[in-house]
Length: 469
Ligand SMILES: [Zn+2]
Image (tube, rainbow, N blue to C red):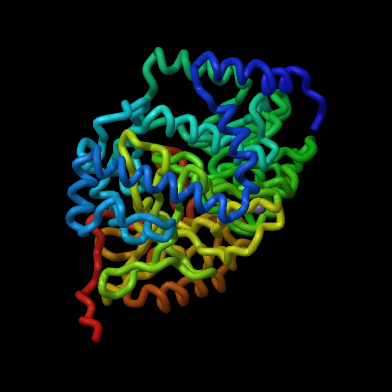
């Protein structure tokens, strides 16, 4: 990276001063976190169980929702003593989180930030958090980004969707000031036509960003365009991606276009950064001082257990520092793969998990009503990356499957590839009528994301399955 005096000044002096003006102790926390990421496991666990006990005491004393939920589960706060006792606490399903916002809001501290998330189901969820929680979120994000060499004061180019609701004029002015100060460049990835991709390349050339950040598939599409047209004129630019899954061939495309510094992040509007890939590129480190991320597998009889290494589990998150409107064991709707807790090559002690695999809501059903993981299609198309550029599998409300495919060769899918797809669908989605549609692009969601698997509402669940013995 070339010497950039303004960037250094911005990062070391102006940015911290700005943070202090706004009364945020983000910097002090960031320094603290840069130490605790290498603390002993004992120290980390002691710290986290302390935060957990404080959260549980507070939620029980000051919110009607948790008072009722703990009473119903026959629990009192003093039942939670060790870190593993978190498993005794009830789970918070998204549907309950949506209807319990007021009942989860505590008498104190004050709510500092309120925002609404849309979620993949389209049902909004209101998230409220305290000022303390906001400092932790900011510091956690800057620590994680630092592993990708993305530091305060760096110039970043963001490929994001546009907000569903346009911000007010005052908000716009505030955002513009924030961005100017940080020198960041924003470009919408809603449309990814060749013309638009060429504009993005032009932005990289003129603005010379020190980091690229955005949706995984938008970045991968840009990388493929750069490679196809032979447009790379820059050295390595670190890439920080999230919001969507990136596959091995996407990563290869990104490495070719921008260099090998490609980092996965796992975040959401409810909690910001929950996990971040480090320079060892061997999984994601949990934002452990701020959150507890559990990967849970449901067992017959309604109990849950932790996913074993290599196994997928539902993500449940406990926010340790949001006392204003607590989230305890909230099911985000994502699935992630558990990873053996061996020490990471980077030397950090923070617990780890594997790639985030997709949404729980993306479960399809065959004609007999058996659930089929939509993730299967990712595996199918991973093997066909040579023939297909993009795909989307949509299970219609009537049960039929619509497969939209963007072939590598325009307008054509080789007959043997089509036969393979039909055989695959026949095996895994038995009895389901299949329509393959050859398209030139896949429509994006309102937020600019590419959803690879879509299960339409009022979804068909086939014939009732026979009761299991
Ligand atoms: Zn690491």
